[in-house]
Length: 352
Ligand SMILES: Nc1ncnc2c1ncn2[C@@H]1O[C@H](COP(=O)(O)OP(=O)(O)OP(=O)(O)O)[C@@H](O)[C@H]1O
Ligand SMILES: [Mg+2]
Image (cartoon, rainbow, N blue to C red):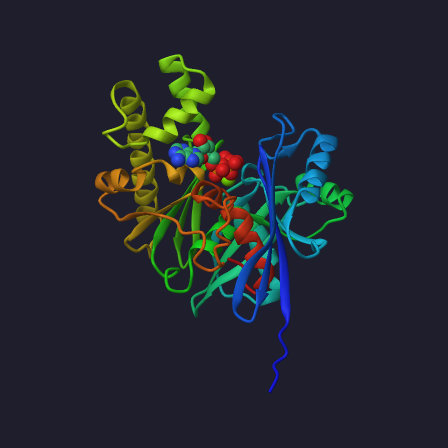
C-alpha cells in the first residue's frame, strides 16, 4: 500500500533594525523540519525604528542573506514577514453583534474613540476572536500604508512576494504556545538587543507593551559604569549573568537594577490587565524568549520576585531541533520570530 506524501514548505523572514533572519520550514507527514536558514547583520542606520532609511543597503543585505543560505531545497518566492512593532498598532475591541459586512464600518466607528486614526493612510486587518449572543470581540491591526508599501516594494526587488505581514507578537505566540499551553493566561517577554516586548496572552493576545530594557541597554550600562569596552562588557554580561558566584559588586548592582525594573514593569502590566479587562484571569506563568532569555539565572531570579512561575522558552517544541552548531541556545532564542513566521505558512488558517 502506498500513501501520497506531500511536502509543504514555508519561508519566514524576520526583519529587525539590525538583523535579517530567514528560515524555510518543510512539513512532511506531521513532522516540521528546518530546510534552509540564514542570518545577516544590517548596518546601523539602514533601518531606524522600523523605517527603511537606506533601501539600497537593505536590498544588498537581503540578497546576501539569500545567497548565503544554508541547507537544501529551493527557496520559495512567497514569504511571510513582519511589520515593525513601532509602526503597527493592534487593539481588541468589543462591539455589538453585527453582520460580517458591517464589521469594517463598526470598527471605523469604534476605534477612533480610543485612538486618532485616519483610515485613508492606513491598512487595516481584523479577526473575530469571540462571538457571543452579546456581541463580538474583534482584534484589529493597523499599519501606515507607506510603511507597508516600502516593505512590499523592497521585497519585490529581491523577487519575493510577501503573502502575509504580521506583527511580531503573532509569530512568537504561535511558535511558543501549543494547544496544550495556549489556554493558560500568561505573559511572553521577548528580550532583544534593541527592545523588549511584553505580550499578555489569554486565549489570544490581549495587549502588548514595549519595555525600556534591552540587551544593548544592559551592555551600555556596564560600559558607562565600569568604563569597559563594548565587547568586554558584552562578554562579562554573558559569562556572569545573575549567578552570584560569578558576578559580584558593581556588575551585580547593574543587573539587580535591571531585574527590579523588569519586576516593576511586569507587575504593572498584570495590574493593568486585572483592572481593565473585566474577564481577566490569574496570570499563571511568564515565558522569556529572545537572546536576553539566555541571561544566566534570569528565570529563577525573576520568579522569586514575581512569585509567578517563570520559564525560558523552548523554540523547538513544534519544529524539530536541527541540532546544528548554528542553532545553539542563543541563536535558537533569536530565531523565534522567523520560526513562528514560517509556521504561519504551514498553518495558513490560523491567525495567531
Ligand atoms: N547568555 C546571554 N546572556 C545575556 N544576554 C544575552 C545572552 N545571549 C544573548 N544575549 C543578548 O541578547 C540580545 C540579542 O537578542 P536577539 O537576538 O533576540 O535580538 P534581536 O532580535 O536581534 O533584536 P531586537 O529584537 O531588539 O530587534 C543581545 O543584547 C545579547 O547580548
Ligand atoms: Mg528580536
